[in-house]
Image (cartoon, rainbow, N blue to C red; front, top):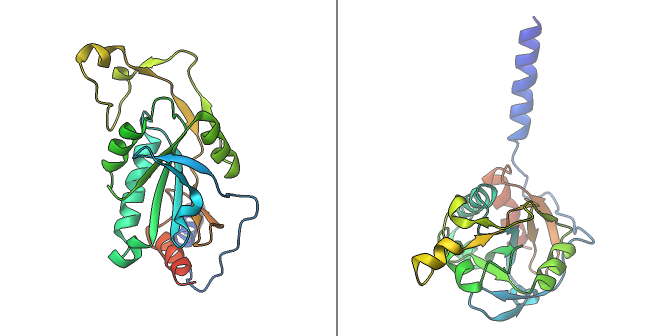
Length: 214
């Protein structure tokens, strides 16, 4: 009898977790999360976040030497973006902000992002700029290693390119823990929802479509 109760409870929880977001559900403005900032894009150009006005933006934080969470997140965002129509894609910007701008040069960040989707946008800048962006979105990151680790010992999706093998052997970097929240931002730059890679794709796309149609 107990096993049946546990089974029924598990099924109920599973069904509840798959309940899709109703498109007529209003998404509130999340006060104190987000705001305008300056950054360097993957082409080395200085931009303002306000340049994205009129588009829906999804922001993720991470870094190119991340061995698991970041590739998984970008893979999820690739599937999310593919679930949108071509017209919806033109109105939606997927933005990846590095927390390790010292290592993630614009060129390397562009190659890393392009591995998942060439339409995705990579943002870097000075460490001060990055820290300001992190604080705006109430995100967090922490360095895990005091000493840099040879990058050849890190499982990487897209290694940095070097002029010769000796430079590659000497390459090293830090490892970080960081926030995994995905920030959904409307056409006026307001954060409207916090999502995760566990959010069903249909639910996430429904929220994006709702903001596109506002």
